[in-house]
Amino acid sequence: MAYKYIYNLVLNQEPGTLILDKDKIERFIPGQDKKAPAEENALDAAGCHLMPSLIDVHVHLREPGFEYKEDISSGLAAAASGGFGRVMAMANTEPVNDNAVTTRFMLAQAEKAHPLGPFVHPVGALTRGLQGRELAPLAELAWAGCKAFSNDGIGVMDNELFRRAVEYSSDLKVLVIDHCEDHYLSSGGVVNEGRISNYLGLKGIPDIAESLQVSRDILLAAYLDTPIHLAHISCEASVELIYQAKQKSIPISAETCPHYLLWDENLVKNYNTMAKVNPPLRTRSDVLALRQAVNERVIDIVATDHAPHADFEKEVPFAQAPNGISGLDTALSLCLGLVDRNILKLEDLSRLMALAPARIFDLPACEFIRGQSADFILMDLKQDWTVDPDTMVSRGKNTPCLGEKLKGKVMAHFLNGIPVINRFS
Image (cartoon, rainbow, N blue to C red; front, side):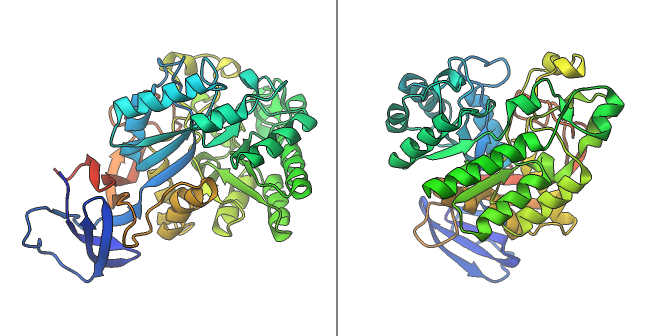
């Protein structure tokens, strides 16, 4: 059902009524109004907070090739439930998304499963087969609909090749997302290198494996005067480099993930494969540095790096388990926990999870200005829910917060004025 009035809501701490004109924002009228307008097409928001529909610039939807973990239909259903109206799907599928046929297949699957949204924006492979040896047909991928290029999962070690990729992508006006990892330094590692890796007897991944590539990208961005986006930043050393780059106006942007803002390496002490992720969970000092970085806009975006796996894949010895955390269902509620503890503000989440992603990747986001697409969510900040296989929509149930009670739930999710999720009815 399309609504014209949504009343008894809160926008930026101010109660009021949102008026829609079909698929567009008409206006927000401040003021407490507990009663429904005379028209029938009105929704009582029950004191929920109004936020833009979120944008996740880093997800793994697994289709084609790994549908037993997730497919585009189930991944987008989880996105809708978690508040994400647009997701950027990485290229490490099977076959790899390094050709127009695969790109168009992903877009067609999304249109078939969720014609009203959420919407997929494929990320094309930077190199053929993600092998890091030769460039993928970037122009073909851009024309087919890829919103960015990345070798996510396998960093590009060849600096000359990476330079050419950035230059060519710039000509196409498409951003490169770099997976910052020096594979010579990280090879064989499964946890953060340090006290915990020694305690567990597991090979560690040093933070310099990330920060070394971050420094490479910053130097290239400065030399070429061309933007590069840095994926899933996990450590204080990288934050310091990004801060210095931004002080010099070097065109770098960066993301981190909820798990790097919340959890540290101690979570893997009992060989907890649910907490095995790449880059690995780092130290408490790294967590605090990242929290400061998102507050001070050194880190631009919070993305989920949604990486669903089948249950049996995580039920193996730690070193054999795949990396990844399923995040679309839980990301917003987990980040609301940071708001509840006064580490972030609700407006920060709108910036980090909607407005900044839209600006950096040239995607639409709702700022509740007249004429904008009516893409928004209604959040009940007080409602508790327990993370378990039944409450998670994604096929991937692999998260360290399984069994925990979180606060904050998406009660309604509107895209182009149509509710794709409505938990009020």
